Image (cartoon, rainbow, N blue to C red):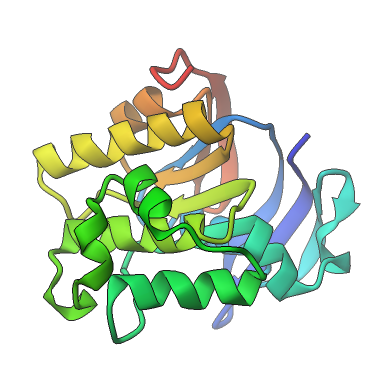
Length: 218
């Protein structure tokens, strides 16, 4: 089992965001779906300790998440946020920074290729990238740390259909080529069915259902 959540609750600004959530997330690809405000993004943040639950426990590979040093955990369980947050400079400098933090030897061309970008993007100024290119650069930066798990928060929400389809093909390819596990937050059940083996549905901060999906990623 990748992640095990038991009676997990989380409050923010006096509001209950997650309420006694219990779920298992297996190796492979899991989609977290539900309406806006249901707690999807918060749940994703708990999985790599960008926040900690107020109550309950989360385990990763059988070990309590609280025992992991947060920065070390985030190199293994890497989050691609909904809004790109690249550092000023070039795409290549962003990848180099991330790889150095993780103590990894960087192959810029490989990381860019895996993220669906040409090698020439290494020299591109991040401030001159389109939103879709920024999303791919964020993905390449995460891949430079060689994670085992990618957490993706609405990875295609700001993209047109063609860009969305291209990102989805990239994610399917990463599963095939790297055996990396994906946990994808999406507001779109159809996207969940395309990308995931299993879906968790959140409604008002609680698990509504868990369904096995036939997925193009398998």
